[in-house]
Image (tube, rainbow, N blue to C red; front, side, top):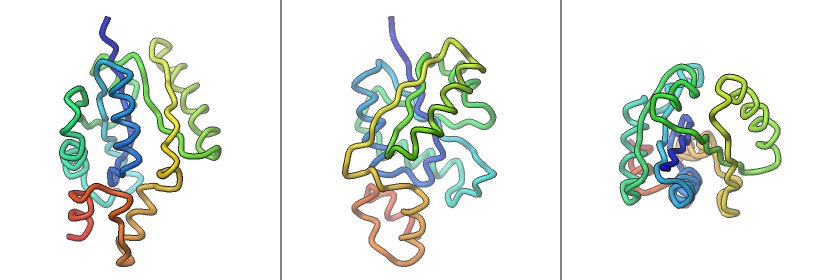
Length: 156
């Protein structure tokens, strides 16, 4: 039986931490669908197409990772792509409380989909997309936190 996992997020921009979680998930599951959320309420820096394309480019080395985008409920996207697992990355204890609430909510919405938490690698526990955007906006060096393609896009 093939197991498909969905790794949802805004990915604005995709960071080395996201890449780490996605590639590790790709070792655990037959297929991983990185699902880029529209998230208009977050007022993303990159539009949905740009975020999806950046993710596609930086994860092109993983043949069992696919990129899609979605709006609306993530569990509906999970159904659409045939995912039975939701992958969520945890950076710190502060993430855990929110992520458990989200996992329980998703279980109520679709009891056939389980959530799996992947602890971020230690070198990425402090990295967030919002911090990367702020460092970039202030002229700082984001190269330790993002792929060179993402750095180039941020510098445009």
